[in-house]
Amino acid sequence: MTNRIVEHPILEVKPKKKIRFVFEEKEVEGVEGDTIASALVALGVVTMGHSLKKHRPRGFYCAIGNCASCDMTVNGIKNVRTCITPLEEKMIVKREFVEDIQDDIR
Amino acid sequence: MIYADVLIVGGGPSGLTAAKMCCEAGLSTIIVERSHILGGQLTKQTHKFFGSKDQYAKMRGIDIAVKLQEDLASFNTLTMMLETTVVGLYEDKVVTILQHNEYKKIKAKAIILATGASEKFLAFENNDLPQIVGAGALQTLVNLYQVIPGKSMVMIGSGNIGLIVSYQMLQAGIEVKKVIEATDRIGGYKVHASKLKRLGVDIQTRKTIKRAIGKDQLEAVEIVRIDENFQEIEGTSEIIETDLLCVSVGLSPLHQLASMMNCKTTYISELGGYVPLIDDHFQCSVPGVFACGDMVGIEEASSAMMEGYLAGLYTCNYLNQPHLEAESLISHYENQLYELRNGLFGRKTLRGIEKRKENLIHA
Image (cartoon, rainbow over all chains, first blue to last red; front, side, top):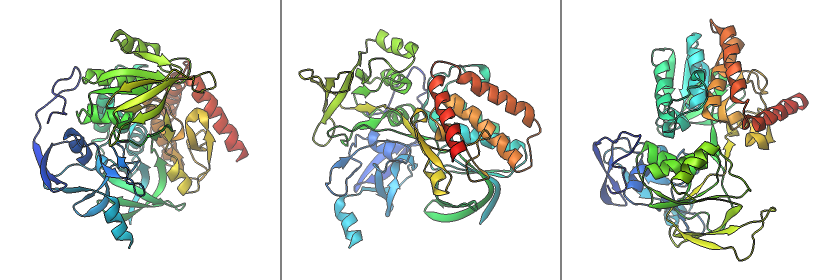
């Protein structure tokens, strides 16, 4: 939880309930009020996925569900816009790699 | 099929204010919002607004977002559909939505498009590296989710957003290494620039980014000095180590839904890009379809709210169910808009609106 604000001149920083979820098969924690993406950024995750053709890493970019940079597979559903999807207990979150997208096309 | 008098696409400043007018006039109204929260850009704006009381001056954006939602709390004719994305929009006003992985259809008598805007991007080498973030997105992460994505940053763009977001990153404890601006002058208000300078932030004009450096994520940026034709001046390269690069080079209206339903659009640079052609009553070229807020031209949230009220009021008139105080409210909000655009920064908007009108006549 090192990437979270602990003190701020304007914002009220309240202790929040923890939410446990699974990211890349590891059990991790976010907090109440998080989206999937904000929880991951707080955990230090910078690569949200990879580009389709050249496998280049993709980061958090627009935060409004517009750019598709943070799309992930959540509970088996592909292309979930993690920046506008609230984090829920026990969610299973996976990054989308080129390999599994190709499998789908075949 | 879900039926409603009015469907509003977008729950930001203009969508919420439009909804208030429609609900007050007794119209059944649905707001569709793709995010899980209402308020749009306001939810991340910790700064106080300028203007007069009627324009929510001296209030912070985050508090205005709460206020606008409180204004709607008492209406039982209003349905809010969050985490819902419009995926199809047709001229007979049937709208396909996707909510929680399920498709549904809505048929409305009138539609108000209030989709807002998205951030523009810049072309440079390695511009797709992780940790290169839009200014609004960084503001959302830090101010709304209270998450700090890096230790230091470089800001590209010295418009109001670039300046305000830089200041807010300092408040959150992120070191702002430099703010760079490609033109020869700082774009935003002097008051915002001065605040940054007082805190020791270096704002440099006639500079641009040449490339981002890093393997799996941003590690440094190369910035260069440019001449009056925006060409690199040899020998001015400077490498700055940073783990965040923030891009604040303006916004583009999210016009796509208007285009999807065959509303005429045109490119107007003063308004930020493609915008639907609206008449004086915020109506698009397809009757019964209205558009307001950043979608019809990039301005500040204060203007978006005034436009929202007006678009709501005109929609009620179109449906022959005018708001009880329609006349006085319309003149009030038209005056507010006029005032907001009266300043130095409003000139560009007014030029854009003039062009939009000319295009409408020739359309």
